[in-house]
Length: 283
Image (cartoon, rainbow, N blue to C red; front, side, top):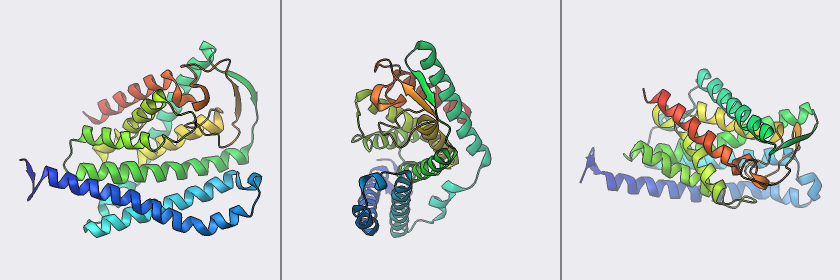
């Protein structure tokens, strides 16, 4: 049996699996505990007051705190240096800009084709600077939370255990897709596309072990998709978009009620984007 150091690969993978399960369980427990005081307040509010972007920002901030604390606890109990977790956030401005640029280009192509094919129509434009700015903050929190959890912890821990980097990438992406399974209008194509999105987001990490690029890509992918173009984001409608879209019919080009991530165009763009990243980093 192949060994790494004094341990077999199987043993190292087993430890990684235990850490991932422990991390997930701790995150649920901690987020639940720290959310109770805020949930009590929200119960006293009307639904209209609670369903605001400010509420979403508060909720996501609590989730980020829970995820970070859970990751730190598991890391600490394993005796790992925090540099292994912290290096994921070493600032790399080129990666931030590259992630933002890739998200913009992918949507320019995808949305452009959708318009050209008549799969979507622009029904109106509503420029609301405050809504765009607040949603930008919200989706940054979403990106940091999910990237820390799925790439910074899960993918990193699998790589540490000696799992082949592409197998680790697939496993972390599959988990990323599975956590969206309860989203509205989630179907098989949505599952495949979010799986591919997870591979896209992690494809640079297996080479750089840094989260700047995936956070930036994830951040602007969601923000452009929802608050700018007016699609649902993974099946959820968080706020009105800069554009109001009308779908002549739900089909594989526009993604229907799940949004662009439920479309075959998204499938193609995820594959092309991943291939581009792997080609660049694989040199």
